[in-house]
Image 1 (tube, helix red, strand yellow):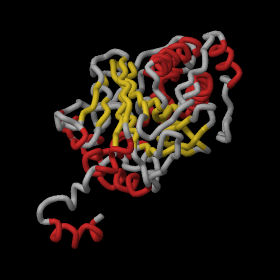
Image 2 (tube, helix red, strand yellow):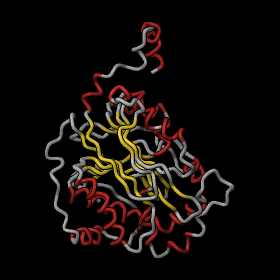
Image 3 (cartoon, one colour):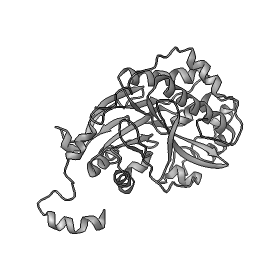
Image 4 (cartoon, one colour):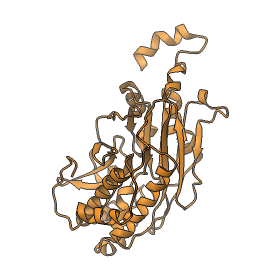
Length: 341
């Protein structure tokens, strides 16, 4: 499994996914043939949460998203948080657990943590393998980098929240676990990650900040210090999407650290008594934009599939002044800047 091992059995195999993908007659792209830091084409997907009736239906739909991005010349494609849970709906035992997923309202999270934990205990292997094999195979066939969003699954009897990153050969380039615990992670007792990772790509260095990780200054600052020019921010707003979510989070991290931020999002009706809102956005430092609101492009935010695909110039980031030392009282700021940051 591309150097990634798991414990547990599954009825879904890599060959089964490959047979479905082979029937799609995908032609490899040449999007990675020429890679330049002055023109990195990234795509943020707005994916619709919906049930799937079979593995084939899921694989075909995922290919439609990836193919759309590839046809727009995307080199790096960003999927949303919890994208890895979408295959769960076609697992035969899912309906027996679905009614227990709705929150009773006693928790901060709209999903019932115990019900989700129990469902994952039974369905994790098949759900994960359908997701992992599909993303790896599509990355290889389309020959692009795919940040496959995040998923919840059991790894060696421990539940984790993890995002996966595949290169243009379909190999696992790495993964990033969630750092800042949200209500769901706290309820499920998922251990937090203690490291922000840097992923080197032919287009430039990137880091991944899942969900609320991008709302923490420290996570993005560490990524910036490691050398990341782009942070990929898979998200899914389990509660109401507000103006604060739009103005803070990845947008603020882009301003503070002179970097680009790519936010993908899961939208639509979950069938569990709540809907997912928000949409995808690509952010840049205001110095690079005429309208000065940080937003380079955004999806519709409606309950439908959508995509934004933009070419980013990483070299332009180096010309931006440090926002913490470029004001008129530079001497005052400079004496504290190293101590603070």
